[in-house]
Length: 60
Figure (cartoon, rainbow, N blue to C red):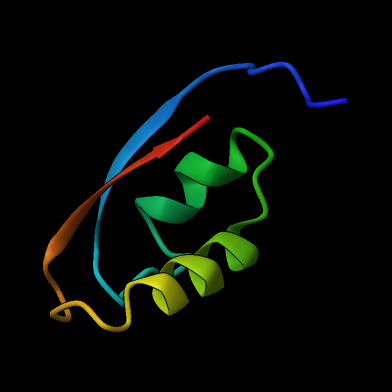
């Protein structure tokens, strides 16, 4: 069974440049999201895009 959505987090992250440092790390950590898992997945999915271009991210 799927988890109930507890909230929504909106960020703009540079393509291929997600790191656990501020502002990404604290924003994810406060909500109990695995920071390193997010950074690795985001960077892998945006590696084909122009590095540094802002990507809107919505996490539920």
